[in-house]
Length: 137
Image (cartoon, rainbow, N blue to C red; front, side, top):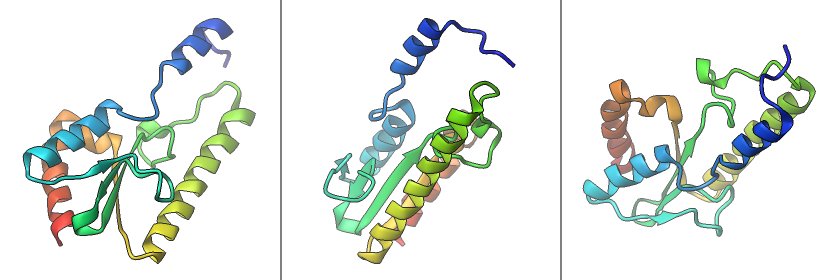
C-alpha cells in the first residue's frame, strides 16, 4: 500500500516526533515527583540514556513508545510502505534496548520499562501505582 502523504508531508510529520520530554515521559515524571521520588532526566552517563534515573533506589526507567521500540501491542504495527527501511530500523532499536538493559543490569541497576500503551487513561493509574511499588521493592 502506498503512503497517503507526500514525501514532504511525511518528512514534516516525522521531524516533529520528539526523542525526549514526550507526553508519556512527562506523565511518569510528574506522577513520580508528586509521590516524593527525585530523579535525573536523560542522564548520558548510563547506557541507553535512561529517561529517568533514581539514584537513591539504584533504578532506571525507560518510557518506551510501542512503535519505536517494538512492543507486542497493536500500536507496534509496522508501516505497510517502505518495509525494507522500517523493519531493520525498528529491530535495531529493540536490539539496542536489550543490549542497554543488559549493560545496566550487569552494573547493578534495576531496570524498569514502561510502555506507552500502559499509560492510556483507563490503565495509567494502576500502572503508575505498580511502578512506585517496583521502585521501592
